[in-house]
Amino acid sequence: LERRITFGFSGRVDVKGKIKSYTNDGKLILGINYKNKSYVLESPLYGEQSAENLLASIAIALELGLSLKEIRNALSKLKAPLGRLNVQSYKNFILIDDTYNANPDSTKAAIELVGRIKSFKRKVLFLGDMLELGDKSIKFHQSLKTVVTKSRIDEVYTIGPKMKYLNEKLNNDKIIAKHFIKRNMLSSYIKKLDLDDSVILVKGSRGMKMEEFLSEIK
Image (cartoon, rainbow, N blue to C red; front, top):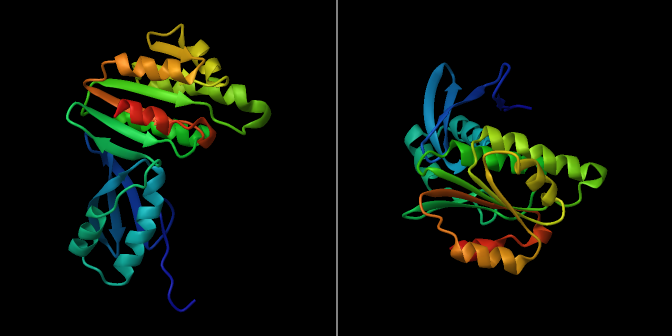
């Protein structure tokens, strides 16, 4: 190729990225090294999985000669699509809409994000089943206990036959963990729940239609 630019978070690359830290509301702060110059950029997107896409875009922009000011201006206009780590800030809580789909990796990443946000004290999860995981489905759901504990989650509300296995794992911990068999039972519970001073995640596979509970919370 006549013109090629490489990027990454390790190895010998033209544009090297590093996740330096996070803001109090959980946004990535990226360090960029390019042609012996260092830049620091705050990402408007959430989740470490967005970092590689951002780095690719920044690498192209730098190679095309865009200024740091132009890149920052473009970044400020970026918004996450609905259902994909879409973080909505309200006066008394933060609501994370990650309802588009769920697998073990994306669920773990979303829970980690909740743990990193310092703006509000309480950490609350509403989780629906992760579908189509085959024979290891129960194990995958149970394994979420590790990240829930590590992220210092306060409350976990689950729905779906597979999430019941996570609920059973959490019942021995100092976490409020409630499982709901019927959708209307969870909806009724949400209406009575005081979610003041909370970071709230709503996540589940597409078939779980978790966006309905998102509406209840709003």
